[in-house]
Length: 195
Length: 302
Image 1 (cartoon, rainbow over the protein chains, first blue to last red):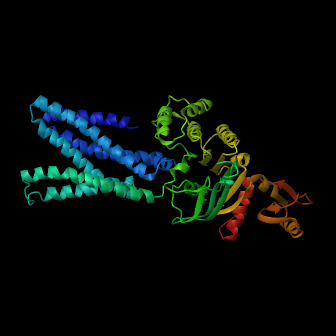
Image 2: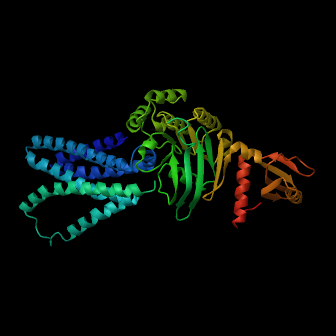
C-alpha cells in the first residue's frame, strides 16, 4: 500500500542528495527524516479514513488496542527505514567529502529521536480530533514555537556545547517515555470512539 | 455445542438505544433465529446502519444488550467476531491490494481463515486475483468482500447495504449466495437494505425501522399473508373495516379514490367497488411509514 509513497520518498531522497552534493550540506538529509516521518504518519491515517479500514478491522477479531499498537509499530518502522536510508546516505557523504562520520551519524540519530518525539505528541491528537483537523494542529504546535524562537533568537540565551550533549543523552529517554504515554492515551481515546 | 444446548437465536438485541445530536435509535428489539435470513429495511437515515454498527460493537450503546451465539458482545470479546462475516457498503480495503495480499492479511486476522476456500470463491465469482482492487467493478468488490466473509467458517453474516449500486444480475448472484449460506441451519444472515425487493426475494424475517424505531419485525411470509391493499372509495373501505375482518393500517387518497393497507386474519374477497390486491413488502413499509408520519404530525402528502 505504501509503494507509491516509497517512490515519492525516492524522489525526495534524490533531490536531497543532489542538494547535499551541490551545497555540501548533508544535514538536509537528516531533516528529511523528520519531514517524511511526519508526512507518512499522516498519510497512513488518511488512507485509513479514505478506505474506512478502521471500521472494517474493528469489526473483525482485532481489538482496538491492537489497532492502535499496530499503527504505532508501523509508524516507528517507517521512521527506522527513513533513518537507515539517511544513515547510508550520510555515511556515503562522509566518506566522499571526508567529513567526520560520528557527527553526521549523531545528526541522523537526533533527527530520528525528534521525529519520534513529534509523533508521540501528534498521534494521540489525531485519534482525538481526526486526521483533517490534526494537520492544522500539527502546523500550529510546531510552527508557532519556531516562529517565536526565530523572532526572539537574539534575546534567547546561548545554548552551551555541554548543554547540547546533555540534551542528546536525555532526549531519547524522554522520547521513549512520551511514546509509551502516547500509546496509552491513544488506546484510551480509540476505545471510546464511535466508528 | 449441540442443537439442544445452544439458544434458539443467533442474535438477540434487546432495548438497543443510541443517541446522536440529531437522531435517536430507540429501544430496538430483534431476534434472529439460526438458519434464517433477516432483512433490515428502512429509508435512508432510519437507523439500519446504526443497528448493525451496534451489533458489531463499532459504536457504544446508550442502552440495551446484544447477545450473539448466546454471549454478550463486548470490545474484548474478539473471539465472537471470529464467527461473524462482515460486508460493509463496499470493500473497506486499500485499493492497491491484490487478492494475494488480502489473503495474507486475513490469514493473520482470522484463526479459521481458509485460503483454499477464499481462492475457490474468487474462481466461482470470476474475480481476477492478479488485478488490484481499484481495477475491480463495484460488483466484483462486493463479491470479493463476500468471499472474505465466507472464508473463515463464519456462522453469522452481517451485511450493510451490500446490493446498493449493483446491477440486477449481480444483485441476484449475491442473494443466491446468501440463500446457499443459510442452507446450513447453523448459519444466519442479517442484511440491511433499502432495496425492499431484494429482501422480499431472500429473507425469512423482515424488520422495518423508521426514524430510529422498529415498526415491525415478523416472518416475511406471515406479513405478506396478513396485509392486503384495498382499492376503492374511502367510505367503502371504512365500511369494510367497520364490518370487521380487516383493520386499516394506512391509507392514501387521490382524485381516483383511496388505497388502504389493511391487516387481516382471514382471506379478504373483493366486493363491489373494492379491489383486493396482495401487498408487497415495499407497499407495507410505505403505508406504515406514511401512517406513522401522519400520526406524528410530519408532512405526509397523500
